[in-house]
Every structure is written in structure tokens, then in C-alpha cells.
Image (cartoon, helix red, strand yellow):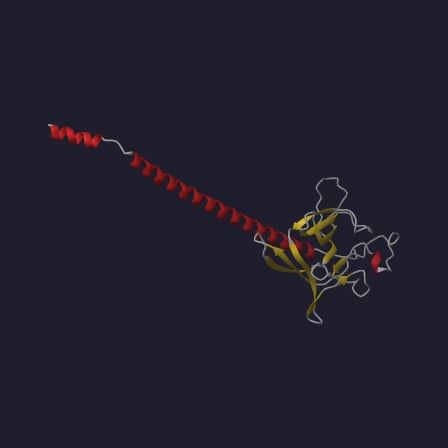
Length: 231
């Protein structure tokens, strides 16, 4: 009887303080490891999302520029009483590649406008500009400006917004099929280039990725209407 009672007493004995402390320590270690793994997972997920957002933004910007440049046009159908048709600089439609080394500018008229309201006084034609500029923090971005009304004061007005952030270089060139090389200047206001547009345009940008590394991108597009509209 005494042996049986002693066995039951041993089975019923509780945990010692040392055992409890060891158990708590093990649980704490496991919880710390789980939380650290979860934290790393969150950081990796955030990094993947930032990279996806970066690549997606670049792809949208490059595709948009290719699409809009491809829709560029010039027209000889304008009011002779308002503009001097003998002077190419007077024509309100234009295509200008302004060579600035790594800081080019592109200005053109294109079929890109969209009416937002039924009775809005605008058409599908617009003035579009792509230029580099610094913000208040000193960061350089590629800006897109759209002016829905085409007039002689083309450098003023319109809506401007950032198309691509942290751009280190913006280079625009056109392909010369005669010389078989890319060239950096085009201006339909000049008499030598007033009666046509380049058939092929290349746009290259250098952009800082989320890690601060410079990435290069390129897109080429063909302009659908290379001669002036006369109707």
C-alpha cells in the first residue's frame, strides 16, 4: 500500500521552477523566431511590391510615349488670315526634337486628346510636351504636358504632370534612312524639315530603381502620318 501511494504522489508532483523557466524560454525563443521570420517576409513582400510598381510604371510611361509619338501630325489646314502660310514657324502644328544631350525635350501635336464632357470645346488634337525638370526636393522627373487647344502660344498653358520619376537621362532621336544613322534634332519650323515628319523615332531613358541603381530603357515607334494633312 505504501509503495502504491508513493507512486501516485510522484505522478501528481507538479513542474519545478526550473522546468517552468525552461519552458517559458523555449516558447519565447520560438515566438521570437516566428516573429523575425514574419518580419522578413513582410520586408521581402514590400520589396517585391516596390519593384513591381517601378517596372510597371516604367512600362506604362514608355508605352504611352510610343503611342502618342506615333500619333503625331502636322497640318497645312489652318487659317491663312491668322497665320502666314509662307512661314513654317507660323504653322500651329509642329514636331520638335530639342537636343539637350541627356536632357532632351520633345514637343509635338498629335491625335491624343479626349473629351471628358459632352459640350467641351476641345478636339482629339492636342499639344504634347515631354521635358525633364527638378522638383522642390531636387529630384529630376520626366514631365508630360498636354494642351487641348492648339494655338500660336503653344509653350504656355495646358496640364502638366509627372510621367516618370527619378529620371537621369532623356534622349530622343530619329532615324535617317539616307545616312542610316540616328540623329538628334528635328524641327518642322525649319524650311528643310517643315513638309514631313520622321518615320521612326527612338526614345531612351535612364531611371533610378528603388535601390538607387540606374536602369536604362528604350522604345521605338513609327509615326503613322509623316506628311502634312491638307484636308
